[in-house]
Every structure is written in structure tokens, then in C-alpha cells.
Length: 314
Image 1 (cartoon, rainbow, N blue to C red):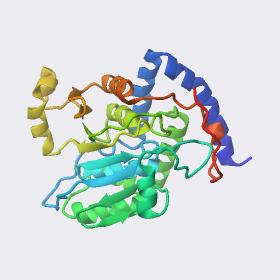
Image 2 (tube, rainbow, N blue to C red):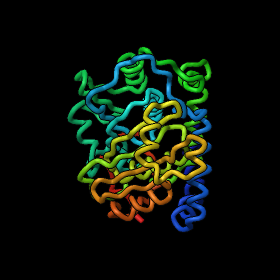
Image 3 (cartoon, rainbow, N blue to C red):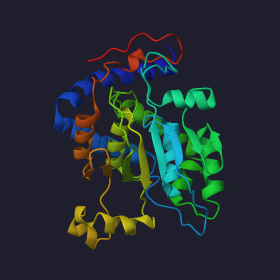
């Protein structure tokens, strides 16, 4: 038995314990959401928590478009770079349709766009209308973003540690294992859940260094809800304007400490603004979810690309 199959077997056993508890008991789901997502953030040393110091780098005029999904560790690297560079992007979530086959594109909302534009289903996929650039490969995307929008921006120490230091591969592997064994419920950013589309893109404010933001991004991913992601890392000049625009939603102690309240979600389709991750999660499921969660686990996982069998539902 290969190492991958051993890891998959152990992870699937953990899923069979965690998934029923997560879906049945709100207290368990909340505990799991807050503390396990915090572990994932810490395995990346909260990369994306701080903005790089900008000394005049170019800013995109038109919004960048990123096709990705929360459960993809390579996509996370790109999101971390975007957060450090303090960029706003339109996210079109592309979670897997099933564990049982790779490269499935039948019911997905945005995966067909990637396949049509780039010729293959691979993520992340970045589209920059400012330079007529479209590209795959996380490392290539990150290099492009720094050259185009960060050539005069310094890199925080925690960014260097997980992205460029000699430890980067080891830390990335640790993060992948933590995701596989701990944050392993399919709707936590890995597998799509049937939903109705949002007519207008939702707007989300947050950064990669917050475990509460992870919770919201996972739901936006599984429901395939396009959204404009406004980066608000510490050190971002946008935080001052954000604090003014949403002053009524920020507690007095946060104002006194010069802090903001994230994640924040605005839904222009219903004119709804929410700031608590648990409230946002409940709202999104209630408003957009139309079908059941999958009952697949890692035991169904297949890296090959046969014609898929129908995904099991529960």
C-alpha cells in the first residue's frame, strides 16, 4: 500500500467521525470552524495578515479575476500573495464536483469558463484584463503579481518564511497534511454544494491571516458564489476608509484599538450586510443552498479521470 493510500485511509476514517458531528451539532461545528481553521492559518504563519510596505507599485485599473477554490493549497498561496499585495480580485470559485473522479466539469458554475479559456481544468487560473494576461501555475501567478503590482513593495517576514525561505516546501507539506486530516469536511471549500447563482457578485472584506475569514471563504466556495474579495491586511491603507464606511458595525473597543471587524460580507442582491462569520455562514446557506451536501469521503478519492459515477448525496 502506497503512502498516499495510507494517508487517504486514515483521513477517511477521521472524516467518518467528524462529518456527522459537524453537520448535526452546531456547537461542534462552531468549535471545529474556529479552532481547526486557526491551526491551518498558523501552519502558514498567518501569511497574508500583514500587507507589504508599498512604495509606489502600480495598481490594477480593472479588477483581476481568479478562478480557484478554498480547499486547494496551491490556490491558497496565490491568495496569500494577493493579500500581502493588498489587491482586490473577483473570485469565481471552482470546487471539485466529486472526489471520485478528477477533472469533472458537468454541473460546475465556473469550471467551464476555465476549460474554455485555457484548455484544461487546473487551478488556480488568473485573468488580468489590464495586461491581457491569463495563466495557470501558482508560482508563475505569484511571480507575475509581484512583478506587475509589487515591484516596489517589501515582503513581510512571515511571507518570506513560508514562500521563499529554505523551509517553504516543508511548511507547505505540513499545511497540506493539516488540511487533509483536520479541515476535512467536503463543504469546507473542497466539494461543491448545489446552489442558486448570485445575480450580482457578492462583496467580501478580509485577509488570509484570519481564521474567521477562512470560514466564510469556505462557504462562498462550496456554494460557488462569485464575489469581489477586498483585501484588508494589517497595514493596508484601505482599512481607514473601511472603518469610516462601516463604523456602525465596529465595536467601541475595536475602534479604540484602531481595529476593524472582519470578515464582512455585503450581498447587493438582498442589500444585506453581515460581519460575524457564523451569521454570514448561516445567511449564505439559507439564501443560496438548494441541495444536500455530498456524502463522499476521501475513500472515494480518485486522481484519475474516468467518466464519473453520480456523486452520492445525503
